Length: 190
Ligand code: 5GP
Image (cartoon, rainbow, N blue to C red; front, top):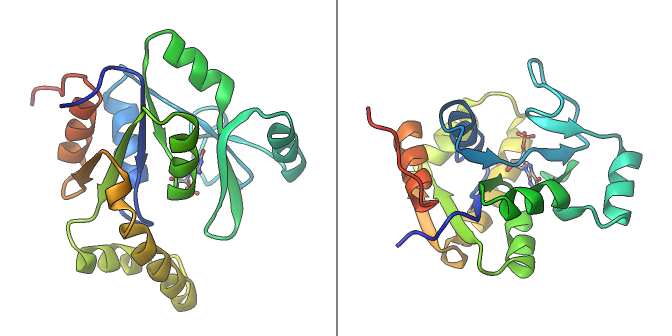
């Protein structure tokens, strides 16, 4: 059975579509409090400060780490740092909100240490072949980078047993609805 409102962590391999599922939830489920992470990565076109991320310089991120302001943080794809702001997440939980963190696997493991009774949901691809197709299909990475991400993805897939639930991302709406019901909320009628 799904757990009560509180903290839910969504993680999964590279290119499984975590970002697409969380964007769908942001746009369609205002009852979900989706955490906005801090990152040192530069904004992509259309990304807004405070909506998609809080964009930080390396020095600003260092200060957040030094002050203990991050519930978890990680270097993702060997490049930029990403982290969850502890105070906003704790306040939302205290207010009884249904909080969702969409983070990478290293971050999920840190949250498991800090908040072991959170609800951990693994987003899985329909198949390995589909995952390769999605990764290569993006067309934004060099062949070397694609190979590196596939190696990482293999290791990440092996983490599934560490999670309370698995949701297969065969269809974004369906996967988002399943995630929302695992959070103890009612999926929308269509
Ligand atoms: P992107 O740069 O495409 O927005 O995100 C890259 C990766 O960073 C995704 O796998 C996403 O799950 C992860 N990520 C985003 N925010 C956080 C965070 O606060 N903590 C951690 N550990 N990973 C994050």
